Length: 244
Image 1 (cartoon, rainbow, N blue to C red):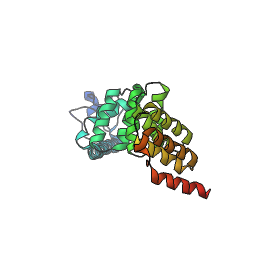
Image 2: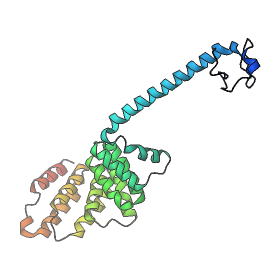
Image 3: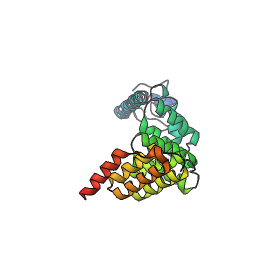
């Protein structure tokens, strides 16, 4: 092996003058001998292979990153790093949710919303509403629940969404209690959509007597204008009840 400017090929330190002319070459610093040329060559080749392998992995990872995140491929990197080390903040998750929404990565949006709701319970409504749009009713019910547990849910809209989520997951008694509370909150208003969903729930679970009582009550409270309210549904309820 040729010397590199009179230095040892292995440790790169200058060889003593008397050692340079001795064969085989022996380094006075690390003990390297010229007979180790083949081993050193193999080690060098391994280093080259590792270097190119690392470069190839980087290129592939960069390509995958670009394919997954498109124009957000750079913006998502610091957020991903913070997530990895457990240092991501609510603002980081908000930014990630916006990126995911832009790219229509719905699971990613939902996961980000869940993280922000952990820091601010009022954001649980946003999470639940998003899950309802995806027909993920069990998950939506879990998202809405902290709002009632903490006492911050005062919006009838939240109660209605929660009632629908409970109904969709077969938690009938719990759903009924929320439907009743919603109707009681606005007794002077005919909440047609709420009543329709309430009656539908009762019919699906063969609670025909409750459905008939509900319709009769709504008709009574609505006066003459409500005499034929849900007439078709009432006829069907009576027909189904007679079969039992």
